[in-house]
Amino acid sequence: MKRTLLVVAALTVSVPLLGQTGYQPSAANLAAREWFQDARFGMFIHWGVYSVLGDGEWVMNNRKIPVADYEKLPAFFNPVAFDAAEWVSLAKAAGMKYITITSKHHDGFAMFDSTVSDYNIVARTPYQKDPMKALAEECRRQGLKLFFYYSQLDWHNPDYYPRGNTGHDAGRPDSGSWPRYLDYMNAQLSELLTHYGEIGGIWFDGWWDKPDADWKLGTTYALIHKLQPQALIGSNHHRRPNPGEDFQMFEKDLPGGRSQSFNSDSEIGNLPLETCETMNGAWGFNITDRRYKSTREVIRYLVRAAGSNANFLLNVGPMPDGRIQPEFVTRLREVGAWTSKFGESIYGTRGGPIPPHPWGVTTRTGNRVYVHVLDAPDASLLLPPLPAAVQSAKLLDGGRAVDFKTGEFGVVLTLPKERDAIDTVIVLDLAR
Ligand code: FHN
Image (tube, rainbow, N blue to C red; front, side, top):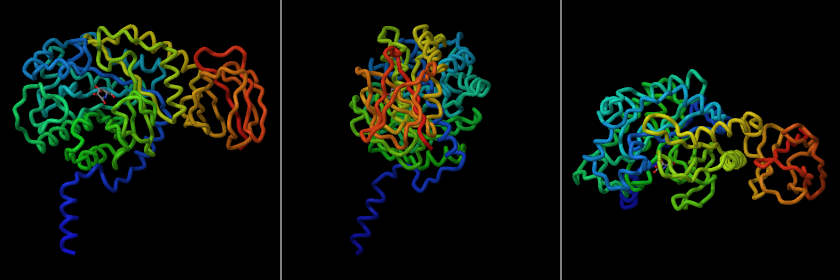
């Protein structure tokens, strides 16, 4: 008996608590989750001093730049052309309902005014202003929600010790206090949750760098939920959600997809879902990356995400002067032309009654089902039996009736001869 107790005690001490156990989301948080799912489309922004080098946000690690040299970068970072109103209007024009921006990426540089450390944009750059403040105000003015990305992984702070899998060439001493690092992180999070009004949530990244560490997630999550109970917490740990998280994200894969090595352990939980993807191949500004996705590809990703019951967080990496590059602006405006016409089949919907197929996906609101025909080679399309009888079928674009036949096998739709090059959306109204 004594031995069993000892074993239990030992286990209790050595296994780090994964999350905020016993967490009960507040009514405001549950409402925010509904809002989040209705929103379906957001803008991801990776912006930091790394943009000066035009080689992505991992440049410090990839080029083995030590802290002492990387610290010279902020002096060159002067985004005088940054205009929060322009960014927010662009997101809005694309049909996006929220923005998630890097407040601190793995390089440890705070893109906000932080009293916890002077390694921040106000103290160390000639710009001397807090772009998060401007963005928070502008989002409020234009009716978008603002989420803060926060990297738990830190290549700059010496207390991020023992080191994780990355950041070994930063030239930091082989010592540091992990508890002090967690205090630093929680203090910065408190700033983000108290200086910018009501925020949409915190988008964590970097846990994966030290998966065996005791991150004391419960303390951090409880702090956030105490300061802003409605704020949604998500963590890009590529695993099933932990207690205390309010949404689950997937990176460069639709939910459940495993095309990326870091998604090999990913599993879909039961929280609202989001998937994020880049416009070219890079998150942070990369001056030589010309692998731009076409507008059609971007829209189809949005459609496939909605059909997988997930939001789409589409990334831009602004340039060091604060502007968003023209290749992105053009595509976002074109996406906006599509969302303004076909938005009812995306916003406020949930994944439809038919799981995603190679031919396309379905979304639904109430008893209305939207069939998004993306790649159906034949003249007709067989849908498996639906939860209720189809009463009418018509094209979303123009309202022309679509012929259909119902049988034990399901429903056969006669597809229009002229297909939409992006997405032929057929609206089915089901019996109540
Ligand atoms: O390492 C980061 C990367 O720089 C970027 O921020 C993406 C966005 O999802 N997440 C990380 C890798 O999982």
